[in-house]
Length: 231
Image 1 (cartoon, rainbow, N blue to C red):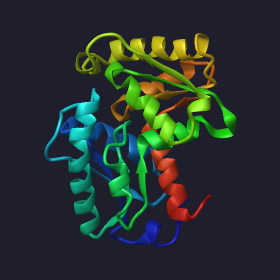
Image 2: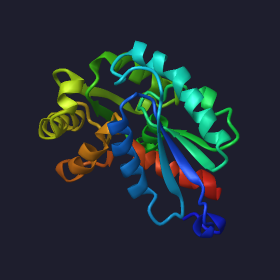
Image 3: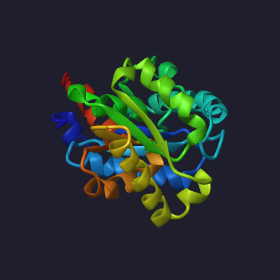
């Protein structure tokens, strides 16, 4: 738990959650998840939506297009003076390497979720809605040196944006994909690959026989560790 000035100062430091897509509704959803995850730490969460870029990151071109806008938003957040840490809140972590040059802790939700899923040597899979990002997901896993533990990704069918607008259908489709990670691929943990999928990830937990890792809470746990000096 964060202690000292974080818990008592009137202008508490903010963990700034940068949404790499231009949907303000998505920012609100992810910010609410982060606030729940950081409740009791003394940290507040401020959500920021990038001013330009794709409305949803469903393919490699969208990830690349989002990256410079993430960097701009993160720099502005740090310049505001109340930023304790930055969360890059898209599973592909666009712009993460450049944002890490800023003088505050920076965590990508994808990197945090993958590391947590692979803890203690677990084999893990990814269940998500964006099949066009299959190669990008595998490359992200490889950059973290986790390929030997990766059982692969399972994807929902249909257009991701339409599915996202139907919460019940989204949950059902992600449940099928996550079960496939376990039953077909041998995953010992399943990452739900997307920040906006956080609500579905919470609902999935009791439906699976293995741990379900939601990216935003995983990033919040990592932020808390960095701010408190935990290993």
